[in-house]
Amino acid sequence: MQRDIGHPNGPFGLLILALVSVFGTVQIYFWTDRSIWIDEVSQLLNFPLTNLAQAFGPLPEAQQAGPPVFNLLLQAISGLSIHVMRLIIILLTLCVISAAMFGAFGKRALPMAAGLLVLLSLPSFLINGSMLKFYAFDAAGFAIFAAWIYAKDRSAGLNFRDIAVLLAGLFLGVSTIVGACVVVGVFLVLRLLGRQLEVKEIALAGLLIVLALAYYLQIGHATKIQITAFPDAYGGLGMEALQRFGDATMELFRIRGAATLFAVCLVALAAVAFTKGAERSQLSGLILYISAILAVFLGLAAIGKYPAASSRHLVWMLGVFPVLTGAVVDCLLRSVSYRRSIAITGLAILSCIFAATGLRVISKWPPQLVEGSSEQVIATLADLPPSQVLHYFGTFRLIPLMIERGAPISHHSYAPSLSTHSVAIDPSYFDPKWNEMDADLFSELIEDMLHNDPAGWAKMYIMLRLRGDFRPLARFVLDAAPRDGSTFYISSIHAVWPGDTGRATHGLRQVLDEKSCDYEPVGVFITLLSPGYVLKVKCPKLP
Image (tube, rainbow, N blue to C red):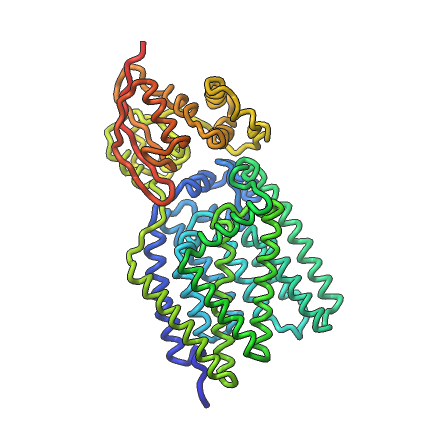
């Protein structure tokens, strides 16, 4: 009997899967050894939590939030090194995605290998999959949904085991709330069209929706502070929101990833057109789910309920992508017996694309990492003699975190102090009147806020960004500078040197010039995320 080339007992399939595993191991090795950026700094400020109840609400520091499962994971691993934490997060994510694909494809090695290859070739997965944020868990949840709709026998009704599987995916992330509801809805529609839908299935779907609603209310409570604190990041309606969604999708996949996705989709449509039986039914069900979930998310974005302002908000797509890729390969392999020429042509096209993708990634090793500049800033401070160091912009969060984590920079004296506690911000602070206010009055009010208001940091951060004038923050910082004319340093992260007009560094330079200070960079660190610098400064002696 001819052996299925995709079966694990087929040496070719096992060899390809082994090669992809080696490829993935090297990729993970490169991409997990990178410096943290400001969002990760803000997240880590919260851990370890003082009590586990905090995992289910707004996090106590820096306006942060996350799903409880991820918060509890960070609670468990926060004492480890950054590198090890990254490894744990991406390996757990890959374990869930691989388990989902195993549930979809069984012991057929080639579909699994194809799905993992396209996933591990994407920088966006390697970045977000190892980020100290929850986005990778969204991808893991959607891999469960996509694999379930592909593998689920439509002649068998929805049962408690199915609900348990879907709930496991739902509770992993945030976008997973929508994904779980849509996938069960698509399945029920397919059952209805086949005139097989039973009342008990509707009851079970209702149970899932009730639990999803309860989880939605919990997530809404946990994220309310974060979302309301950043109206410029999470705002947008109609065409503006849809354009942001499209831009974020292209940022997620980039040109080559988008080209691979396009090719996979074309082959998938051809496979649906020319195959038959179970493989056609399974693949068409998966495509229907993907179409439905895209339509729902686009609709939610248009009405302002799903703010896809960045590629990291769409990482859930990276859970669907490998399952779709593996499903197309699986469908073609299973149709070789009756659509040989079409199946082999499709497999050949995909094989060429996958091989080219993998070889191109390998040719770029070691890759240019997308990382923050925190390690460089900390290393620079560690090499300086004991000095007065002023925080600026992101280092209000970075320096306390790194000292707590044992960085050798505690020999310096740091100022000024500023609370980064999470607080709800009254929307009146985002009123246009603040942008129309006289510059001197605005600066006076912000400086007073930073000195006297425990919520000053949270309000200031967004108000200055909306106005495009960071001089009030710079004045607050330089008020803490030595008054005897001695040399001091200023450290900053998430700000570029020398800086564009209206940005944080430009405001700092304006105030340094106002005060006739001499300054020069000791280190300038240009990274793709959260660049930073350290300045050596000397200001005139004050009476």
